[in-house]
Amino acid sequence: MFTCQNGTTFIYFSKTTQDMQNAQLKKYLRESLRTEIVGAKQKIEACNQSLDVLAKTSLNNAKYLVGIYSHWAPEGEKDISITYKGALESAIKTAETEFKEVNKRSDVQGKYTVRIFLGEALHLLPEQFFEQYKQKIIT
Image 1 (cartoon, rainbow, N blue to C red):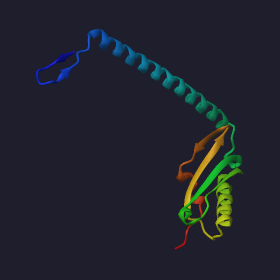
Image 2 (cartoon, rainbow, N blue to C red):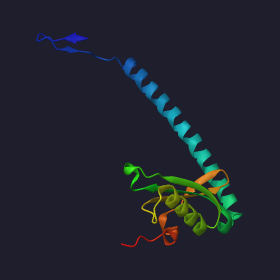
Image 3 (cartoon, one colour):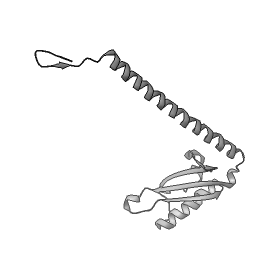
Image 4 (spheres, helix red, strand yellow):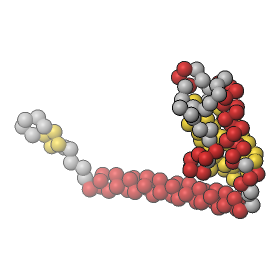
């Protein structure tokens, strides 16, 4: 440590202290990267399992999770979520019917999310694959 005449104090780290800090940082980074590798391997294994299930799955008899999140929730409407086994179109129609019954309305004004079960894993479907089945709002 060194103090100037104006009172400013400077701390000098010895090379040994810097080496210790660098060693600790390398240890942290090494452990962090190994943890990421383990997570990536688990993700790859889960994806491979989903691919195996997909190969045996008929999309006309698949298990879907459909959520409709009401645009009017701040005014008291309810969101719904259903699990449905069958065709995607039927899953959407069933969710819409549930939404309309729960919210006592004749149309659906909400955001849809659709996931498919492949084994125990859920996979989000892009809207382009189900938008043609959604109820059209007539204005």
